[in-house]
Structure formats: structure tokens, C-alpha cells
Length: 325
Ligand code: CA
Image (tube, rainbow, N blue to C red):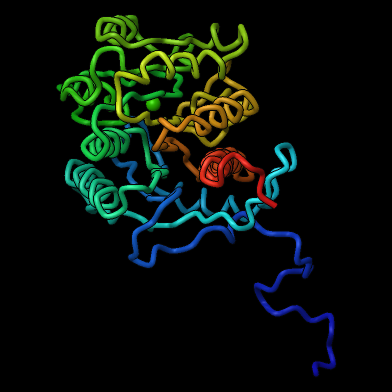
């Protein structure tokens, strides 16, 4: 028996409240057996960014941010303490070869989906270039896909000027035929962050654009859900690509491309919950967080809520729509 009862061991919780489950404790490393449910795959690549970016550090920051929150969703009355978030770990990047790193992302996401056909991946970027390989692999595994992209930018720069960067993923997906006409919805595109050439390109390829003006008009989640319903019968699965710079700079200081006039975090979280509650939505990525620019992990904390909302709705679906207690 210790003679110093108030001496806490390193790493030991301050309070031993059995009813207080940390969200980070839901994360379990992949043991190699087939996984159902939601799984994390880290894609720590940001050398492909047009501007200087430390987004390669974001997968670790997002996992750490889960430790700031509990597993109790009081608003829905759902306790996630028995839910599991399988962690497949991080994809090993080549030290200097960007295209090889992007190839590894596609290959790894593809093999995870081949080994675990029921898993719903959350790819943790990295910059937005990681989405091209991840979505191509997702489409190879699932069939025809539609994408809901939350972003301030169109991300359809040409590939000739700088190769595959964080400005090109959706151009790549359109030009390689992964995203066919009518299968891309861009949400949160805003002023002074794009060129008319790119807006025209998206429209010419059948993309739908919900600008920030449309988001501010209200009912964004409903409008997104209506779009998904409208293309549902034409695709096999829907993937959500979340560039955190869709948020206003006040909500996402840790993005390399910050700016005013963006989405608020409550609206984003409602949109993610609505999408996650749709069975057709089977994959997600979260990109463009640079932890070296962030303030008190504000941006990674939003990502943690996005992960938990996605997990909550998919878990609720798995247990037949009944609240878990
Ligand atoms: Ca982007």
C-alpha cells in the first residue's frame, strides 16, 4: 500500500469514473482479421501541396484530438462506448517521390478494401492530393461512385503545370473516368478562392456546385441529401471528401488556405451526420489540416467530431436504428 495516495502514476486518469469513456479509447489497432464498420487509414502526405504544408502531421493530430472528447452523444442519446474504430495505421510514404507516395495510397486503400469488403474507411490526410488515389481505389472496390466534396476550392487545376498536387484531385478523377458526369457535388465553394476557368470546367463535366451563398441560404444538409438521393440509383456507393478549408477561418485556423465567408462547424457537422446516416455513403476522407498552424488543435477537434458523427450514424445503422446504451 502506497503511503502517498495522491501520487498519480504517469498516464493514469485523474478521475476513475467508470461512466466516462474517452473517444480515443474506441480506437483499436487492426489485428489482421476482417473488419466491419468504420476504419481509420492515415495518409501522411503533404509534399504534394502547392503551398508549404505540414498536413503530413495531421493523422496523428486527429487521433490525438479524439482524446479531448467523450463517447457520449448527449444530443442523440447515444453512447458510443461499445463502438469500435479500427485503426489500420499510417501508409508509409516515399521520402521524396510524390507520385510513388500517391500510388501507395491507392494501392493500400485498395488492399484494405479488398481484405475488408464491409469496412467503411475514413482516410486521414494529408493534403487533398491523397483523395485522388483513395477515391480511385474506393471506386475499384465498390463500382461506380459519386463524391460529395466539401471545399472552398474546385481542385480541378490542370495536371500539366505542376503534376498531381492538392489542386488537382478532382481533375484527375474526372479525366481518368472514375468520376463520370453528374457524380460530383461540390459544397461550400466560395468567393475569391477560385478561377472562372475551374468553375466552367466542373460545370462542363456535369458537376453540381453548391456555393457558400447557397449554403448560407439554409438547409444545406437537406439539399445535399436530396442530391445523393437523386443520383443514388446511378451509383454503387457515395464517398465524402472533406477539405477542412470549407470552414471559415474562424473555425479552421489550422488550414493552409484560410479565408473568410466559409461554413461554420455546426453546419458542417450536421451535413456529415446527415450523409453518414445514408446507407449509400461508405467512405470519407478528411484533408488539409496543418497542425503546425493550428491553435489549440481547433481544426483537428472539428475532425474528431466529424469522425465521431460518422461512427455514430454508421453504428446506429448497424444496430437497427436503435439508440445504444
Ligand atoms: Ca481542396
